[in-house]
Length: 93
Image (tube, rainbow, N blue to C red; front, side, top):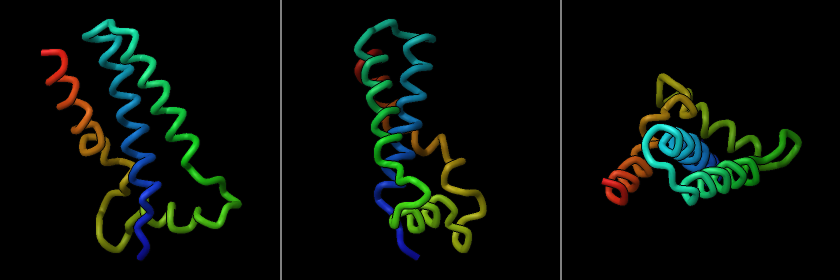
């Protein structure tokens, strides 16, 4: 099984961007937070390979990880928002 670093980075960027949008509207009205969130979402879209690209097979197999894990990696949202939530809690106590 090949683990795709871009799949892990795309999940981390996507969920960090989503959490930062939530954090912007729910807790802290800093414009920098929403700009970084939009940049992270664009970055996640940019590094996700198209369906016809060669790297898509390892990308999909990383997101599934069927033999090793019960749930697909894309459903592990709590794991992927953990780093950004700690960083935002440290920056904005």
